[in-house]
Image (cartoon, rainbow, N blue to C red):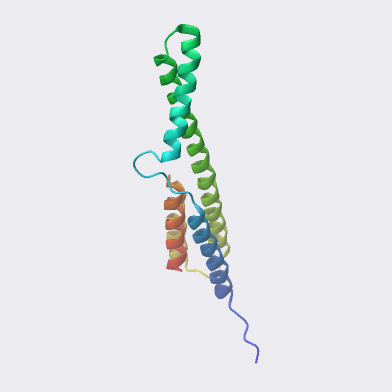
Length: 146
């Protein structure tokens, strides 16, 4: 006798695949730098300061202004790059949440209405989180509830 999986089992399988994807994304995320400046960042910052100081000493006879501007420019550029990475990671995490929402809504016929609304509420709270890691953690917790 051939055993046919129930629609709820199919839903669980699809959600499990999305959970695996969320966990994979979470592992590939670049963690924010922890306290202090890494050696290479310090070297780049000092190089920017030296270049800025050299340029301003050539034109104005003083290097202090250019050194500060060079350091500030390097820090600002580093901040822009960090923001771009975080934005891309957040977009990726929100894609997972959106796919989970579609799956949960698609399982409307097989999931209790009250339970489904609770899942959808939890997914929308996950989508409202700011950090990508929080979004993914909350979304995997929703899948675990099923």
